[in-house]
Image: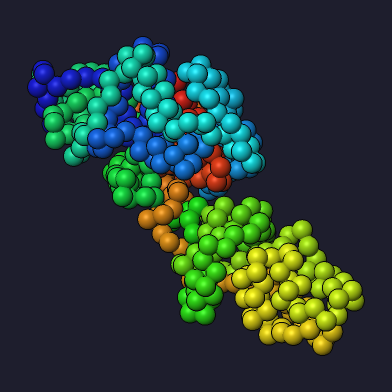
Length: 411
């Protein structure tokens, strides 16, 4: 492969101008590296823009290794410790962006998520990075050197040739920040995984995560009938539990507790749902039976559950009529439907609505300090494309900031 003298050279080219890519570009350029940030989209940082209901849940004060899933649970520790949630909060404050904390340590913009995009682009621009959208990369090749290509060799510093529809570019370091497969309508592709495989890196099988769960047959019908009903719930699977909101939808179950457990759920497994975690429902029903024996069980249950949900529980447990007329076995069956409702999802809504992608470039292939591929000098992977997946609530953005910074310090 020969190059012409007009092929532009950069110290670092970053492909993917999302959260991780912009952070990496700003960090690298601030170190004096000649930096090019490319993206195929016209609007950069689209996943940032749509996040948090348009207010961007940009980090979480409780971010640490325990809030991430990975084939190597220790891999994320280095990056997270070198660029913390408090470092990002300091950056937000530097730019005068007003923010607030919601539940469970989640940090949101007071105004619009576009402020975070503008902040990152401003950091890139002030540091001297070049940012270009609507550039589609058609291929990546190892750059050619004089010992292999003669006098017309590439720049001795160049390791990679990046081919685009608008011309070729060379770089010493190449960073892949192209994200995962979630939300394809905003441009998600498998590009990053293809690059990893091109250079012989293992890719952990991917699946949708932080995604609503779907059901079939009778259970689906019941979810449809309750569409819009929400409760505070504890949802458990395989020894992992989350207590947050649960929402019935026309496809199944959603809400933060369901999205969280979806990252741990495997096809064919049951999940356990406690629809009233603050109540021992059997004890509540027994007390009502003693104090108001003529009360209908559905009415008693509606004291702690939404009315439509109480009706569904009674239908499913076969409980009807006055409490005085119902044996304890019926009360127990009804209570179990509330406190330990065992259900088996048929699947998920998939990448279409998934917030993130589980799996990705195997962390065993990368340096945890620099994010560089161990067997391919000068090639880096950051953000969602890597097999590091955070919990819901700003953790995945923190991984983007931390991994982007780590690579930006190394390229």
